[in-house]
Amino acid sequence: MKRICVYCGHSEGHSPEFTTAAKTVGTALAERGIGLVYGAGGKGMMGAVADGAIEGGGEVIGVIPEGIFSREGLHTGVTRLEVTPNMHGRKRMMAELANGFLALPGGLGTMDELFEIWTWTQLGVHNKPTGILNVNGYYDGLLTFIDVMVDNGFLQQAIRDAVLVGADVNGLLDQVIAHRPGVHPRWANGD
Ligand code: AMP
Image (tube, rainbow, N blue to C red; front, side, top):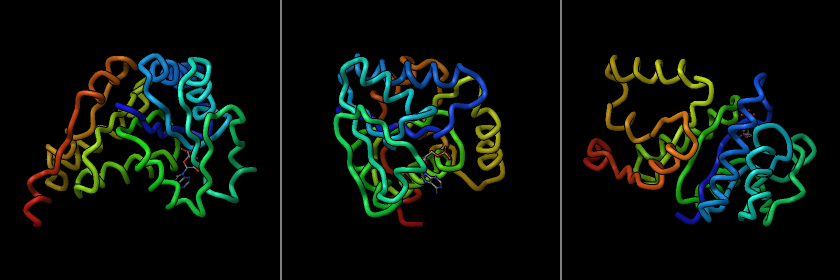
């Protein structure tokens, strides 16, 4: 796998375990020779994941829409910076540059990115693997609700299972690298 796109918070959260995990992700990617694609931020979870990858000597591609530089606080150490005309262009470029996706704890922007890439799996737009790093049980409530969707007949179990979940960075990376979600038959049949 050449590159993984990491979606995560602009903030650092209330526990140091969040940024520690983010930095560990960056370090682990660099150790494996996998490039990082991310939102180019220099602070919070985004800054931590980039710091880990940069310190490990890895490739780090930051992708940011023009006009939000000042709000997001650019990381100055990335190996490549891509500026897109808007947020949609950023999401498309991040998805194209990466061979897999990882969501770490974050806020609404992270959820938007995670759900968009998950629905693109459902639609067959890509067949790249996605993982959720469940640091400190951060995603427990969301995963419970995802099961509510399945239990109530609004989400197919296979589409739920297309996204891998783990709390251990290297264990999750091993799974993501090996996983090929494919196109679910419901969508392949066009219904
Ligand atoms: P957050 O998880 O809210 O801290 O945001 C993390 C990143 O998601 C930031 O770099 C945002 O620019 C980006 N993002 C992507 N889509 C959105 C969106 N719809 N609303 C807000 N932020 C977004």
